[in-house]
Image (tube, rainbow, N blue to C red):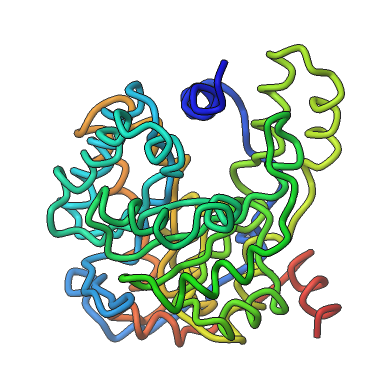
Length: 353
């Protein structure tokens, strides 16, 4: 199998495993956060406004439909459904890694469908940091033009790469490549982790080179160590299966990463184990600009438009209820709501302080 065929085959493997297997690990820390209850909220729940601003764009919701898939014909209908939801609800949406379609232009339709179905939505393109280093800004611009993107996310997935038999394990020069892209790109650059979190130190490096937003992608939700471990078990590769098991607990929990990154700059997207509208409310109260979900939306997106709409409606009802009980009429006000921090999260941030 050629390198290009391996890339697109892997995309379908990932979608199948995520839909069929238990691929979550750890805790993002949201259970350690309690929002201070407003016994006299002094607002009308029916009038709560979920609209927000992100990188100069007006959005109707702080729910970010996080990057999931693309790069194989079998992923097109999932992206079509997710894109229709983004357009309907005024949410931002990110596509999965576009590497496969950049290597094989005949696969670009699995990504183009997102812009076709969501003509007014905020859409983030997506390529890996290693591919950016190898191919340069022109490669990134091809990803942007493929879907008429409003921003481009450069994903950091070195835990996943370390476990994949076909993984890219040389991370040297990636920071310089991102800095060059920030200087030359036609749209804002977002840097996103994919399940291991971003520290205060890394965040400062990223702001200093011109990154416009950070998607923390913390530990505590979908585990790429677990996903790749399952792939290697299916491929009868016991060495890498064991390595995947060894690193299931690796990474910075989402809430800890959010607390660290929010103190260094912004905007910040909280992803990693966000499973409800209440979790979104907690993320906003801790300083996030938006909160991203992937896995909770995947199964309904694979079922039907109506199933996905029902899931998003419920998430929004949860979020509005949490905002009402916090006395927050808007997303901006939610970011000023006080929280109690308990458990392991409290222990970690105290050590960090």
